[in-house]
Image (tube, rainbow, N blue to C red; front, side, top):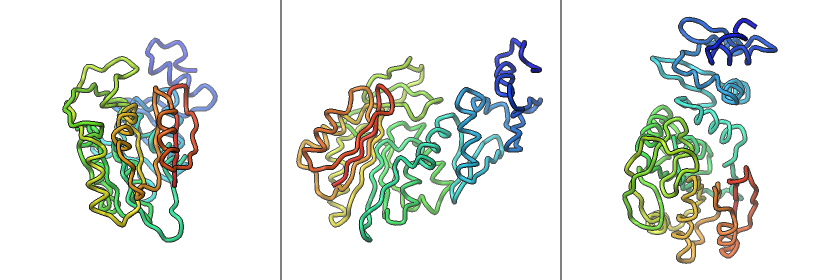
Length: 297
C-alpha cells in the first residue's frame, strides 16, 4: 500500500482503510470517499477514525440519504430531515435512533401522546418523535447551552417537524440549582449535568440551570390534563436523581410509558421504582455500565 510506511497517522489510517479495497483517496483539499462519490473536507477528519467511518458509510445506504457539504458545514439528508454533522456523536445517534429505532413506540387504538424528551442533546430524538403521526407535542430539556444551540439549529433546518417541539435550555434534577459542569464538544451525547464524568474531564465547562423534575413536569401534566405522556430519559447518569424527584409522589396515570438509558449505578433502583408504580418492563444491558429500560402501563 502507498502509505504503509508513512509516519503521518492519517496516511497510516488511510492505508489501513484501503487494505482490502480502495475506499478513500487523499487529495490536497480533502478526502475523496469513493463509495459515496463525495469530497470530505479535512475539517471532518474525525470520520476516518475507527468505527466512525463504518457509521458514515452505513447511514446513506440504510436510510436512503446523502451528505451535503455547504459553506464549510456538513449535513446528512434523509426522509424529510436535514441534520448537521459536527462530530462522531451525530453519526452514532442517527444510527441509534433512525436505524436501530431505539425510541420507536406505538399507541393502542387511535390514542395520541405528548413526549417529554429529557436529555434533548442536539435534538435528534425530538425530531424523531415529532415525525410520529400520533405524537401531538414534544417537550424537550437540554441544560448545556452549546448543545442546545446545536439542537435549535437542527430544529431550524427541519421546520415542519419543529412545529411540534417545545425546547427548554435547562436540565431536570431534584432541586433548583446552578452548577458548573464539564463539556466535551467531541462527544455531545456523553455530557452530564449531575454526576462526575467517568472519563478525563475536559477543560471546557458550562454553567447549567437545573429545575426539579416533579415540579416542572407537573406543570405540563396540569396544562394538558386529558393527554397521555411518554417520557424519554437519557441524561448520562442524572436519571437517578430525576427518578427520585419524579416519584416523590404517586406518578400521574397520564404517564403511560418511560424509555430510559441508565448509566454507572445499575438498573435496580430504577426498575424497582417502575414496577412499584405499575409499569411492565423490558430491561437489558448495553455494556457493563449502561443499559436500556422500557416501561409501559
